[in-house]
Length: 288
Length: 297
Image 1 (cartoon, rainbow over the protein chains, first blue to last red):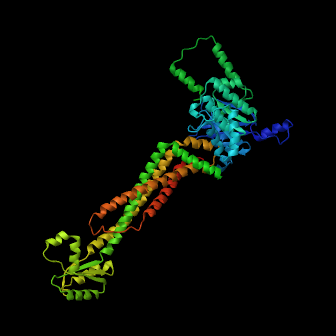
Image 2 (cartoon, each protein chain N blue to C red; image 1 turned 135 degrees about the vertical axis):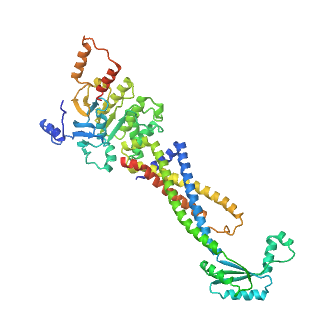
Image 3 (cartoon, rainbow over the protein chains, first blue to last red; image 1 turned 90 degrees about the vertical axis):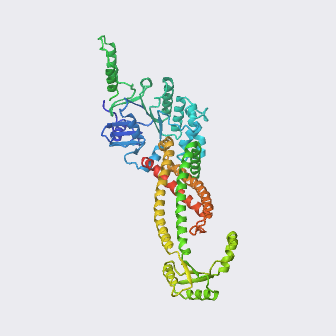
């Protein structure tokens, strides 16, 4: 399926077609024919075109090695495209100088699967840390940190250390740290990867709530149950290519589901699988 | 940088040193040992050169021992004749009586065992320059000119050896100092790299939340500086203590080479010098250790 809205110009054209004023807000993210190849020449992303509007909530799905994390790294300028252009919040990341990167990253909140909390700092100190390193005043810290902790329902445990918290609580603190600077864009790379289904649901609902307040949220995930339940925009990748972009999508495409359904309902007896066959099937499914 | 941020970074640095207690102690210990070796080597080389440079002044003296039968008037006449020689700077007569008196005080058991004063008059001659000692000693040994001279002692051979040794020490000491400086630098770099490695998670988070490279580097540089300065302080204490013990030991050795040669380098000079070297090494080591991260940021 071809990707929607491939360039800024296309987006503006669509806005014009809808009779909107040309001053319509710029999309939050625009990837224009982006490819990333690593040193060995293996493409991590190939000819990806993607536009994400402000305030949107987007799931990036796909097997391991499909290019989800590479795409996220492009967004916070950890990686640079070998071809194509990347725009985030109006910044052309291709033309961005090294010394401009710290200032740019202050407009992005990042959440990881392993939470990334500092083990020797309390919940409060972990969130304060994000403001301290960007030179925030004490007044700002006193105002913003309790608010961020309240947003993630962790205001009651400011003095706890990470090892005293559950996985879900740690992830909430990590989200509070990502939010404390009030960034317009929140990026989450497998935020529920280490969590049980109920806690995962809570974390994704929290991210949805954040998105509802106007923050653009991009979530890379393997969690098919969550994606299917939330019915949000789904962008699917396979072997570095964007293969599907649906506004209210599911983890797997309808065609894929149909195939699965036919296969499971089939009355034909199936050959018994050997261990080697199973491994082959797993590797093929993972795009390897 | 805002004063608020500066205070935060300084506090972060010391908090990190305290929280990584064993790691910090190991780092400080390594830096101290490295700086002690460097400082002690530099100090030893400096003292050897200093002592070697002092030696020629002792060896530009020639002692002329006169025959026992020489009368005092003759001794004075010989002294005047020596004074007229072109290479002579000063001449001094040590009478056998004064030498005997000195010996009686210095070694009474020896003098009481002797029935009479067996000593002779001695003329101490100082050459104008060390390089003239050989020529002057040859002139004094000329029996035709100075038949009263029984024995002439000079330090020509020793002078040449000591001058050569001083030159060698300057070259070897300089080379060794450079080598030790570089190896200490690498030790500090590796030590800081370990602390950087221990704080990689923190550094990563700082990078991702938008800390500037300077902000990330500052506490590491401060940590390097701390290890350098504090290590240098401990090292200078160790060196001064060792130097005092060595001086005591050397003072007990009665040798013409190890006489009292006061050092021009005082304890405060040494401490401040070592602290400056420690600070420089700490900062350079941190910069080298952070190089990889500087490229990434």
